[in-house]
Image (cartoon, rainbow, N blue to C red; front, side):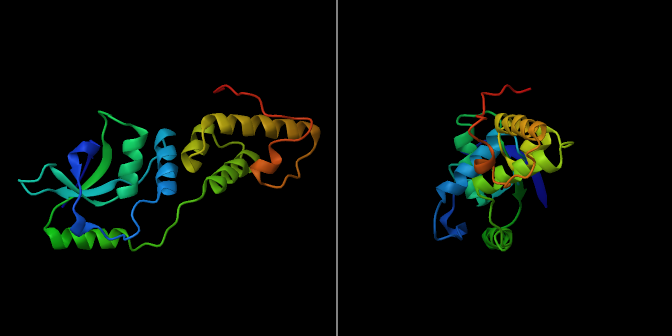
Length: 183
C-alpha cells in the first residue's frame, strides 16, 4: 500500500542500512533541484516508510536524498511539507523499493541545457506560456521574460538565424538585456 502525503523535512530521519549511493550528496544536483523547487516546478515525490516506534523521527527516507536536501534548502523552516509516497513494509521491502527507485538511468539537465531549452521554447513555440516554460525547464520567470524581449528584438531586426545558445544569442553590441518585470 502506498499513501501520498506531505511531510516536513524534520519529520524524516535516515537509516544507513537503506543508503545505496556511496558517493554521498552531489551539491550541484541539489542546487539544480533547489532552483526547480523555488521556481514552482513539480519534482517527483520522495519515498519514505514509517519508522520504528523508538526512532527519533516518525518516518525514514527510502529514496530522494537530493530532493529532500534541496527542498530543505529551498524552504528552510517551512510549514509546508515535501511531497512523499509512504510505503509500508519491513526493512527488506524498503531496501528493495530504494533499489527499484534508483535503477532507472537518468541524469538531470545541466543549468545551461535548461536555459537553452527555454530559449528554444521562446523561439520555436511562442504560444507556450511563461508559466509552462518555467515549469518545463526550471528557468526563472525573469529570464524567460528577458528571452522573450530579446526574441522580439531579433525578429523586428530580421536576425532570426541564431545559434540556439542563450549565452551567445542574448547580447550583441547593440542590445544588452534590461531588468525585466514579470509582465
